[in-house]
Length: 116
Length: 114
Image 1 (spheres, chains in turn blue, red):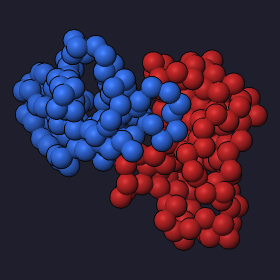
Image 2 (cartoon, rainbow over the protein chains, first blue to last red):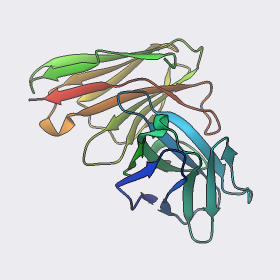
Image 3 (cartoon, rainbow over the protein chains, first blue to last red):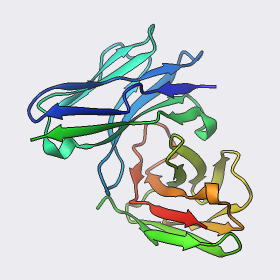
Image 4 (cartoon, rainbow over the protein chains, first blue to last red):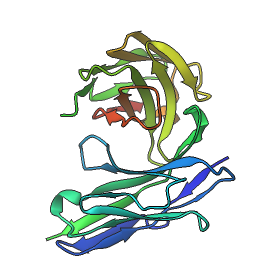
């Protein structure tokens, strides 16, 4: 079974600075997807970024980028130029190719606070 | 906000009650999902529907009964729940049943079972 670990329950960062959230996972699969989701306070969860394991190039979406280290099974999220609106719970998730079911596994989350 | 609405937003029920959660998506999507988000466990996928057909049941107890009458509506019928079922129940939808399709989440129903 796949597992996803986020070792930082809470983090804080000053506005305009850069922060990195860590995520590690355990799997014996070779083909899979990794995701970062953001859940702001009292608002809907949204997808931040997605990485396909067969792609060596790290995914980027504006101020959000990942550092995907397949051999180390690490998938960290870097947020540059942090904004107050980035305050949220961030969830790392893993999905292997195939049906959703138990193949879609989330980490426990990291609560990020962006301070003015 | 994202085109996925859920009602009610908050629900308190006793263990002998029967209640239903409703999800509606206005995005023209074909796949819909139920998730459970509890305080002590990571987010868990419960059910997946694709074109009104249930494609995934992630070993969910039978006291949770989903219903998808059409691609825009998804229900979760609840009966004889346990206090440990208290959680935030999230609905999501996506254009297709494919991992490459982005899921859009609703705001959730916060359920308290007494």
